[in-house]
Length: 261
Length: 295
Image 1 (cartoon, rainbow over the protein chains, first blue to last red):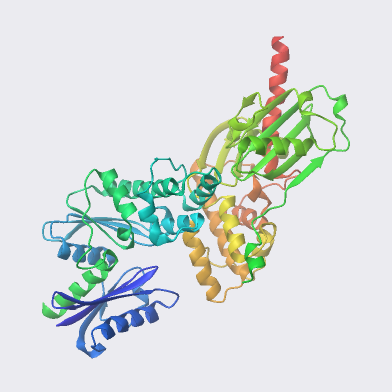
Image 2 (image 1 turned 60 degrees about the vertical axis):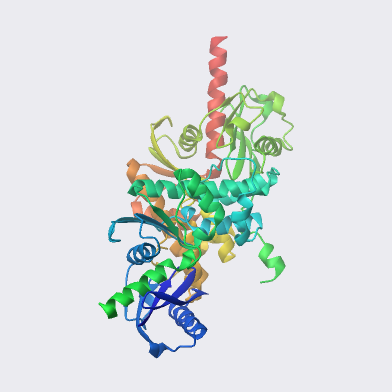
């Protein structure tokens, strides 16, 4: 039976369509101002890709920061639940999930059955979220997609003193004025955001295996910095489905449970 | 938006300089100076026997030693006084170790308390210094000596830099923000995000909803006021209370701090942004006196 999961993120809205436990289709649109319209759009795009209609979908579950604005779905679940569900489905060895999105960061601890044991959220400060990298890519005039790759080309570790995104912007600008190579600045930017998130994870407690999901998990510079900080490699979704869809996948899996029992 | 418009820098606050025409440096016994190299602004104050003779207040460049020198040169401009005739210079602020011609560096917390004592009088017991990239709540005694303090220098919320970001976003000149924010019929709910990055997105949403700029500024000024009041309450506040630093000139924030605390802050007779440099110049004077006593 077909279900849909919609993740209304602060930046992007993601949809995953499942037939039982098989991923049929995914889609992503900018969340923009009207969350519900974006969710409709993302859902329609995902359905069109596989040539089915809304009537074929038996249950729609919504999650994410903007879920309260969605009225056409059957029900909703918290990001903590959908993150845990989606990640455990992909990597059953996961005991700690780190989800770093555009505007928030989450840590979810799971037991051996994938049940949520504990969690922590940063939604107050941009310095640990994708918004930080976005702001730095603007200051550096580097395409955000290229940031991760460039950070790996760095040859020198330089410190970033500022924690705050706003202050870090000024610091990056003065580093540019001092003719610091861009790659080294970009590495410092990634180290900084990884430091923030490592301390958030340590507060909750690290239990292996640890998976990284969310939009920031597409950034290889960030993955590299996190791996270095933690001293081991994170599990990152790659082949089956991209990391920013995991929460939507979790929602679609919960929708399956609702109809299948 | 046209290119010219997008390049306009609304955050650029007005630089200033001043000379007291009633004083003559040639008559002075002790000529002392304080240079406050902040993260955003630099001030140089020159005092004749503990009275303000001249000062300058300008934006900090990317190089601290240059900024200190530029501020000093501008303060001295047209006075006939030269740096070599100043007996003692104290550096303060974030870049205080980068004042090449200073004999000593003293923390800005000590200098702001001392400066507030000078500007507002010895009854001041609590000073809120709202700087470009930090915010400090300071308790002091009747001589302006620091007894306790709390500081936020990690986060742009509640600092001048945060206000600059909003001035740019709303395309309102930073000097006009405070006044404009009071031009509302009813006080709106404060912006709910603490983080300036998120507050910015929130403000964009409010503008889309059709809020006039005045109302958005009111919501941000009151959020900022609330943020710094929290710092003050954590430290414990004792009357009288005064505000120094650039934001002390933003009437929209000052009024909302006063309303929330239910304390009035006295109106400054001198630019409150130079309080740190005044304090440094006063310390410089005291150091000259000390050296003389030793000799």
